[in-house]
Image (cartoon, rainbow, N blue to C red; front, top):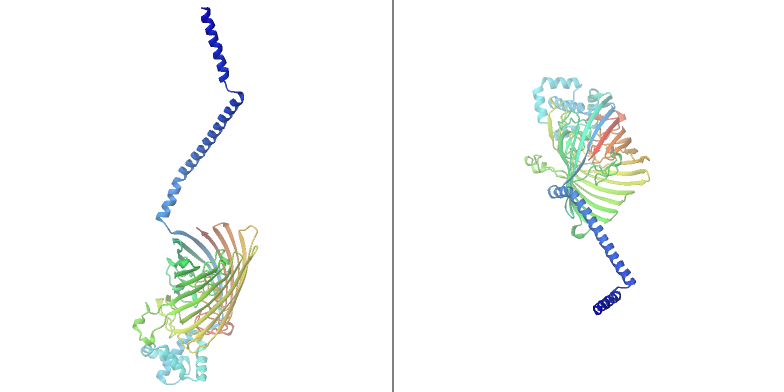
Length: 571
């Protein structure tokens, strides 16, 4: 028994010795714990990453409805729409000078020629002429219905200058009109414009704009010709002049960019040819048209080929068609010798320098085979050939009757932004090259019975605009002066009375714009027209000093004061 206990004790002591020998050292134990701690930290970092991923997944799930909406929009609607709506109230106070009514003179001339044709002598008085017309009215109607402008020209050519002067002395007393006021205390207008843009491909973009512009209370779309160039409803003014509630295509064109990898582009369609520099400043909106606004503010169809010289300069060759003679004008009913030529435009437009703080642009253009008007609708109060009043306010399609010659145009504008001040200065010129043809409306800067001659005109235009520290209010002043024979294609200019840049005389404008918010703008505007010559905006007729009691085909404003208040919302 003792031997057994002794053996067991020896075994226990041997096991304890072995256990102490196998037990690790303190240093290795510390290292083992540190390794475990590192693994724990790594796992904690992985846990944080998982939590971050879970949070990101939650965000993506929350955005999923919006992303699906964007994808749906991209798949189903590739046209981006923007636009603006403007309400404007005008007060217009105008004066007409003393003048002789040209339509009365024209009618008296035709009646006198009827008398001469029957009696083979000059009348002693207009009473004698009127008695003859009344007594032989059936013959008179036959005479006037078969009368042509060529007959009138031939008849006037038979008279000596002395006889013509005596004839005018007899005709003028009945045609005298004392000056009078033409006031419109309140005229409301609404204008809606819808802009369409679509990126068809990486280098192909489509742009378009639809417009509705109407006076309150009238959607007839046709105006009575009042002597102002913007009172004809023609292709070039369908959206620029108030007419009706019809939504019309003002612009529709594509830009094919970087053709063949070169910095050139081609653009075809109804051109962005209204609202060009510097006219956009007074509207507190970006430059709206390619050509200079003081030279061309006219809707037309055409082609532009452009070259981006560098990131600050672009040159464009522009072509347009103003009058298509072979479609819709009855040309097929005329003999070849009597048919008109199309009226074409060709010009070069060069953005010499274009940055945020400075813009310099030059334009030269020629209008070929200019006609005595453009296709359009109008209510004529008088027959332009006989001068007799039209019996009823009948809407008529006006079609040009002759090609009158060519007109050259040129312009240079410099615009700068110096701190809160924007300013510009522009010089413009025109030159006529008539072909000797005149119509009942006249020839290029000549009256119906005159021989047209080459004439030069010019217009100076300058302005400045100051931005107040609140960055919401801007105050501006502009002035322009046109010479006797100044003419531009600006009938679509949005000035409602008449295009201010077409004035043969002086125009002063003072305005203030205020952004109620970023896309809601109020404007108060005052304009003063001080005309010196007749025919502003027309290529027809010999301009006459308004202080000389001139013979005018239609009354012409002497002075106009216009106050306008508008609010525009852009969307």
